Amino acid sequence: MYAVIEVKGRQYIVEKGATIEIDRIIGEKDKELEDIKVLLYKTDNEIKIGKPYLDDIKIQAVIKEEIKKEKIIVFKYKAKKGYHKKQGHRQKMTRLFIADIKAA
Image (tube, rainbow, N blue to C red; front, side):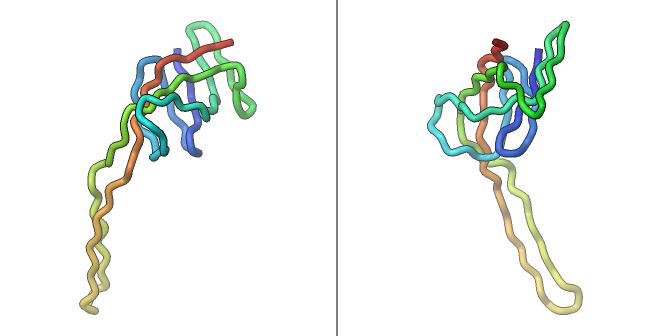
């Protein structure tokens, strides 16, 4: 059993007990997330597809921690002009634990 969900405009495939990393959501640790839209729900013998969302499927997701991804280096330069610029960036992410997928 799995579901395709949409959080902050991005889609993720989730299963019960899975941990996913999404773009940063401001919230407290161990708080349940409520604004999850379900696009698709699949079990062993049925598939439900939303138009665009499924209202009868509820996802229980818990915020576990806020993390930073690996640093990426942004290097810009212009040939023969002496211009160069080096920047680093670490994206902030939120780690979610999918506690349960409930079908009404």
